[in-house]
Image 1: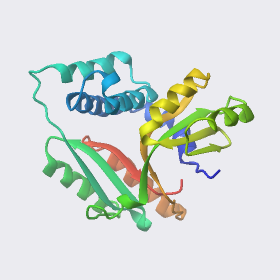
Image 2 (image 1 turned 180 degrees about the vertical axis):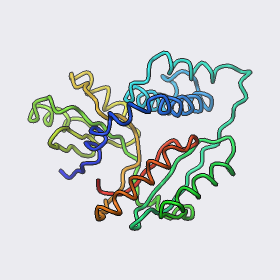
Image 3 (image 1 turned 180 degrees about the horizontal axis):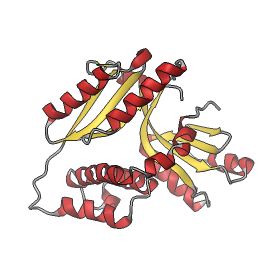
Image 4 (image 1 turned 135 degrees about the vertical axis):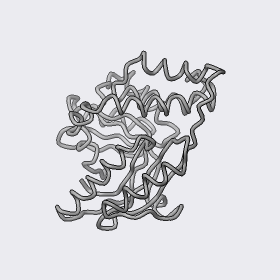
Length: 239
C-alpha cells in the first residue's frame, strides 16, 4: 500500500512545535470555540467539535484549556465572531498551497496572507485553483512499537483507506466521516500511542523540488503558520 513520509517528518519536528506550544494552543482554542459556538457544545452531539478535540489532544493540549474554550462558547454574553476563510495559491517551484483561517477581520487576514506569499516567492490564486489537488481524510500515525503483522491484520478489518508502514511509524488513512470510529476501535484494540491524529487535507500527489526551493517553501509555510488568523496550511511538497 502506498504512502509518504510527511507524517514521519511531523514526528521529527515535534520538538520545534513544542517550543511554540502556547501559540498552537491559542489557535486550537479558537477552533474549539468556533466549533462549539456553531453547534452543540456537547461533543457527543457535535462531530465537528469532537474532531477538533481529538486534534487538540493529539497536540497535548491540557484538558483544562479544552474545557475553557468550550465553556467560553457557552457564554451567551460572548459576542466574538470568526469567519472561516480559505485561501489558495502557489509557492516557490509551483507548489500548491491551501490556507485555512478563522478571522474577525477578513481584510486584515487577506493582506497578511497575500504579502507573506508575495515576499517569499509565492502568489495568491483564485478560489478552486488548487483545492482540487487535495482530499479530506483522517490521518492516524502510530508509534512503531507494535507488531506489524498483528497491527496490519487488525486494521485491515476496520473501515480504512490505506495502511502504510514506514521506518519509524505506521500510518492509517480513513474517510473523514469515520475517522473517530476508526480511532475509537484502535484504542479498544490497544493501539493508543498516537503521533498524529486528525482529519486534514492530504494531497493526491506530491512534488519534489531541489534543496534550495524546498527550503524556500518550508520558510514560506512557517511564515504563514506564524500569522495569528491562520489555522492550517496544506501543501503538496515532498518532504
